[in-house]
Image (tube, rainbow, N blue to C red; front, side):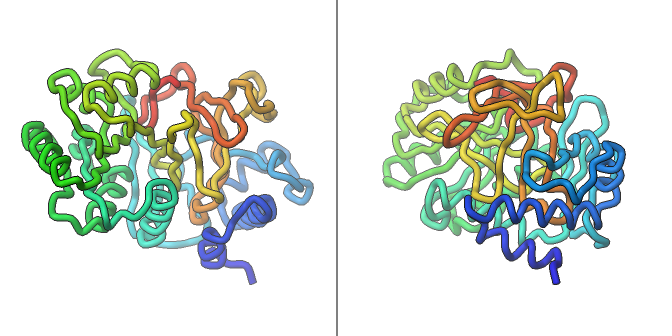
Amino acid sequence: MITLNSFQTNVFHINNQNFEQSALELFLYQYKNNSIYRQYVQFLNVNPSEVNNVSKIPFLPIQFFKNHPVKTGEFVPEHVFESSGTTGTTSKHYIQNLGFYKSICSHIFRSFFGPINKSVIMGLLPSYLERDNSSLVYMVNHFIEESNMQQSGFFLSDTKSLIDNLELLEKQGITVFLFGVTFALLDVANNYNLNLKNLHILETGGMKGRGKELIREELHKKLKSSFHTELVFSEYGMTELLSQAYQLKDGLFHAPPWMRVLIRDIHDPFSLVENGKTGGINVIDLANVHSCAFIETEDLGMALSGGFNVLGRHDNSDLRGCNLLLS
């Protein structure tokens, strides 16, 4: 018997060979057990029995997370993640199992960057720390705890303490991963000239109205120059997804095996475009077993062989934390 627990357990065994079958099975399950998603699919007059490949799966517009409890099955949430926003209406993601979320985040991070418990994890996320229920803060806090390093922690406004710690760790040859919101990282970069070759910077996007948005290439060039490190990366995640993608040295975002990005036609949201063409980003996140795994985001992007790019936002979309930069 297929259950949510079986989907959850199988996530870590998904690969290119079984992705499509897993996605189609979860689609049918969520159609039957997620009332909001089922109503949306029915509104589109889609017959679920005729959905025989991932390109035919309907993607739920992300706005639904603002106005409806998007839940598969009946459960009392262990936690509710809530997005940032400028309109006063925020997205809510009802989390059935925080332990599962932690496992997802850690597995993805380790697959791209190696063991967490051998590195110092720091968070420079002032705009997120000042509000409750941020999934990004929860994830970074989990990494801080998992690192089991005394120097790991958040830095809200004590920039001097952050710099002192980074310089000391550099002298000791200890690897540091610094998760930072764009405006805070730029503030450090504009006021300090550092030499931190062991520092990995993971920018999460977001100027929060504190300056003009930079294209990602320009931002990374500035950060590399000011921190004197070549290890500058980007994180792509959002409140409505349990999984994250990371932009690596090849300049592309890479996702875990259970997450896939498809690009839709900006003039016809129910049609997909081929690799190399710009359009709206649709995400399949098979870790979203308790909400909806098939989401139509408000981001623009391009799928390429081996990864994808994030190119900005649709006009009139609410500003969201990760990742607003142009590529």
